[in-house]
Image 1 (spheres, rainbow, N blue to C red):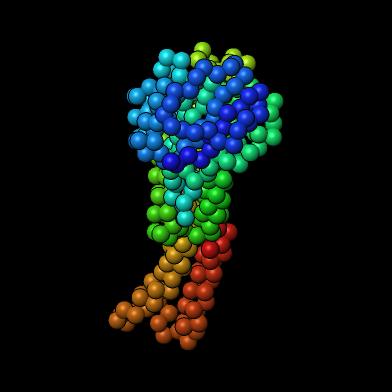
Image 2 (image 1 turned 30 degrees about the vertical axis):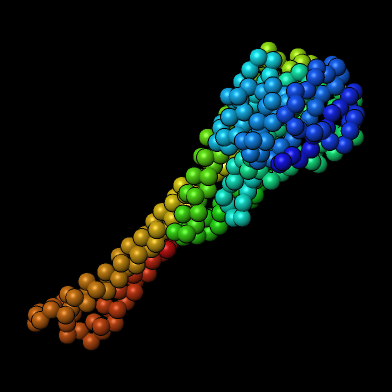
Length: 324
């Protein structure tokens, strides 16, 4: 069986190394006792054993086995069914999504994980050193696992943020190449998908904060409020990244237009300067006998002096207005 861990806790202390998942219904447990079962990509047959043992609703089990659900909260009698989405950065800049479904009922918390490689083993070990926290019940464990999932978004966003900053700094110096522009649009597409997949997490956690739900103690809502704050921060960072990537292309385009404008002004200034000797040389190149100063001994030097004077004046003028 794809069982990661299954233990029974009484007043926050584990009673045995592992529970047996055999499909036999669990008897009613005392109020201070509950089971925490963790499954990773179970089969239909394995989930059927868990369903029989804890009396889970068939529709909720089907949703837990479908790894393409969006985050949601549903109530099946005394059982609370929750779907959360995980996100991890694969090799490169692609985001891999997973799903973790939770069944929270009187005396049990069952997590069903698909896709994500971030196991809850380390979290369970850390919580088992705090018996007073585990003694608060399955709702506290639910909060801890949700917080663990949301905290997993931060390394992903940090990595993408570093990439966006590098692109932004490079775009200031030179207009991005086509490969860089394609990379920017791929990242924006990844972030749009992140918003579609992870975005409903905010609504799901908010419902845990404000709604009157079974197996969620009103005193535990403050813990879910902390998770909600983390989700909102992650979504705000994601939207900021989207805006940064959009601004990179816009800023680079404006800077390139400015550089092209400077080049155009410089070319226009030099064209105006070169037009003077061209015009004078063109006039004196005409085949007429009575051109002014044609037979004057110093006419050549006078014309050259006029060309230099006019071109120098134009150069100084264009220089003063920033065209050269």
